[in-house]
Length: 369
Image 1 (cartoon, rainbow, N blue to C red):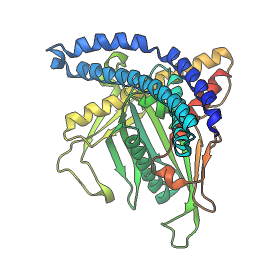
Image 2 (cartoon, helix red, strand yellow):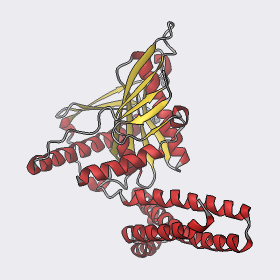
Image 3 (cartoon, helix red, strand yellow):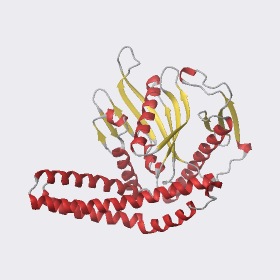
């Protein structure tokens, strides 16, 4: 990109940022920040810990949004000055530096634009993610563990917190299933496009004949339940079983029956929790995930009814959503968006923002059609 072209690029970026601001509405956020700061300063705030956490989390998210917008405006102004100085002085090194900064601004503003597309009812929530090994035997269990690492690394890169809630280990290697909570602004809205069937093709490290193996794993993403959701689950509708927590290879990691399995009798939904320290904590965690699944089930039924009334007969887009190919070539491709990269190692190390961004844009376009 020539130095002479950069002012026009900056002008376009400024226009994009103004459009983003029109959606994010920083002025209304500042008003809410002021109100929340008053609540935070109240001496009895932490008498209700759940409410205090909601207030402080909301305040932090709003402050982050406003600071991010202010920072981008400052960087655009500084980049304009850098372009002017580089042109006046004919400094090739300065020109290269400002070109890099403009490219970085393009990426950061495009990333912020994605946030404006997250306007669903539950998009701002924390997420509960479950990964289950599918067809493919021990390779599928190993794949499930690879996906857990991928999402954990992605969360670390993006400043999200991850808490593993339940783990069911496979006998030989890997995981039968794992459930974890991802906490941070718009965690559910961001990760919701990862739900579906993931497919791995590779030379199996567990096959002594070195044959190529295809294996599958299912990813489920739920919004975390909140007190205001009013999902009533009568005691008569659930069966609660307790058992001892187990680790890799089936070994017991607890000497008491602290793990909890809750079965919702009307729907057949089953939730297990074993990673908390006590049976009471595991039961509470299991109920939260069960309520989250019931909440999503209720929303899916409502959406299905709306589609039926509207005559929408399009199939669900969740199945076979992404392929990870390690042999005979190296490629990860999303089958919905056609976004692909040729470096599976980086993807499994958490570099999935490109897939997530493309998925969010695709979903928005798909719903607009």
